[in-house]
Image (cartoon, rainbow, N blue to C red):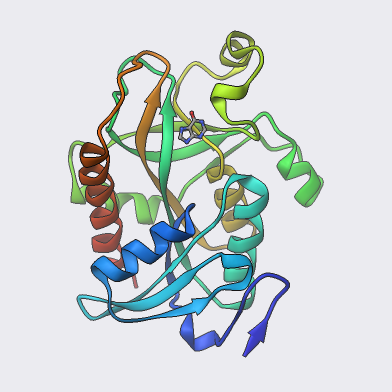
Length: 236
Ligand code: HPA
């Protein structure tokens, strides 16, 4: 049994391939819907994690919580203490680009942040980090409609930013969507020589106030989850 400050489980109960949704109940849903012989392997702080088999491949679904701080804790401990090699975040994002529509599936090829995460972490001023080309190649082969590009990673939920225009003006112009965890994941993966990527579905948009039905959202999420699971089958 390994006990880190935030994870308590047997090392062999964590696969070297991990999918990370933000929401613990989504981790439960994915395990119940897609995995055979799954079991709950972590419940410290209710950050639920399940390990089971997808088409015979051992996979762990580990929730990350929200924000870089939470993601940073869990991905660090998984890579460092549980010998995880591959993590794919599966989450939601806001579109800040007219071409990126509600319910699109996005692959984050790099994450930009104006925060000082890298400075605190390793005394470096780095604001952009790429995801794993190895994982991205596998992912992109699964669905030609995935839109790929640079995403922004913030410490404040978009809708709550006081001066949204200022923020958007400061961001690089080629950013397609905004979320809150990918930079921490990609940065830590890079420092530890591991692989990380991030698939997102667009749940809100600067350019479209339309409410999406829960059915539409569910279908779309399932599509993203299935791409991530199928990708796990191909990593070695
Ligand atoms: N910003 C950050 N994270 C998100 C958003 C957003 O607009 N939508 C879904 N996750």
